[in-house]
Amino acid sequence: MVAKDTKIERLAKRLADARSRRVVLVSHCLLNQNVRYLGGAKCAGVVAAAVDPFIRDGIGLLQMPCPEQVAWGGVLKRYILRFYGSERTLTYRMRRVLFPVFRLYTRWRYRSIARRVVDQIADYTRSGYEIVGIVGVGDSPSCGVTHTLDLERALPVIAGIDLDTIDPPTFTERAVQACMVEGKGLYVAALQRELTRRKMNVAFLEY
Ligand code: SF4
Figure 1 (cartoon, rainbow, N blue to C red):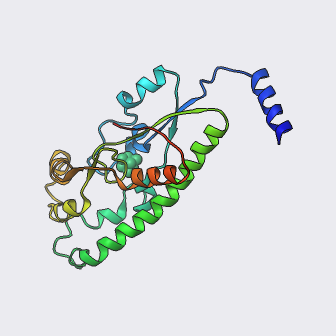
Figure 2 (figure 1 turned 120 degrees about the horizontal axis):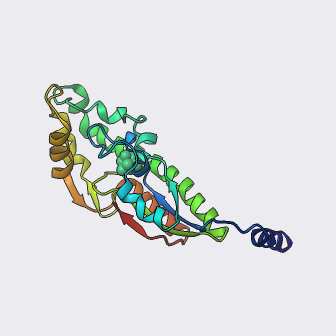
């Protein structure tokens, strides 16, 4: 093993190149607004203000998976869309049973995503790279670092929307801003738990 490590070190010196050996992990939607909830994209594609400082400093961007895309039914998060305007349906009346199951399922899926992401962090660290931090997204029920969404409070709002008249500003104001609370999103919490379990320390930032 020692000989192998020495060989890698020699090669890394011989083949030294332009890389900064610094990487920041970013929430998926900061590089791709196409995965945002309907009505929630702030720009066409990349959120330049969130990543420009890292680009200027020569820091590589590692795009994490969008946990809601993975766990909540794809780009459109179809499992959640079922609740939009569902006030008078059986699905909504069953919410007291469905919601805890949904939350447990989400935690289970997020733990597995977090494990794979922390595997990548461990690989970079073991290889002598610096992980500058993890950038989450404020107000997200999944990626919030200091501000998240109270899903239980948002659910009746979402269920009560009128599908024929709703628009992005109204939806964001009622279902997101009015339901915002202090705290971590479910995915960021899963990441932090996994980092702690593996005795790793990475700074979290919120955009
Ligand atoms: S879950 Fe995270 S990555 Fe996905 S859209 Fe929400 S904030 Fe962005």
